[in-house]
Image (cartoon, rainbow, N blue to C red; front, side, top):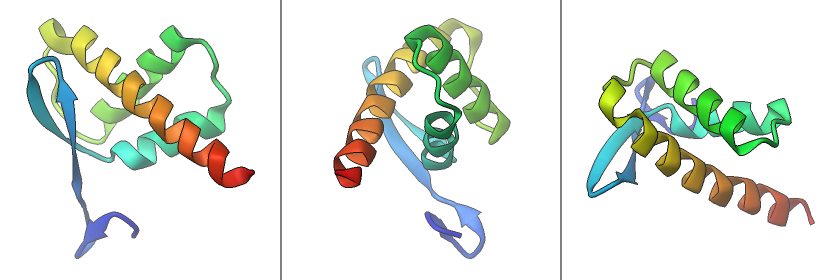
Length: 87
């Protein structure tokens, strides 16, 4: 399994507001959202949050908007990298 050691996913560190958060399954989440073809930023943010939670990451309701912004920022970098590699 890519991005894992001994069958367990590795956490990706993401800057969320003024703190760093370790997120499990972020790369796979990005892949799934990219393949879905979503283009609306609000839909992308919601889907990213949903999928990240499905990986078992706990995100408090009070911080969800900060996480959504952080995930969208990182997702845009991921999408740009994929599109650049495709050229």
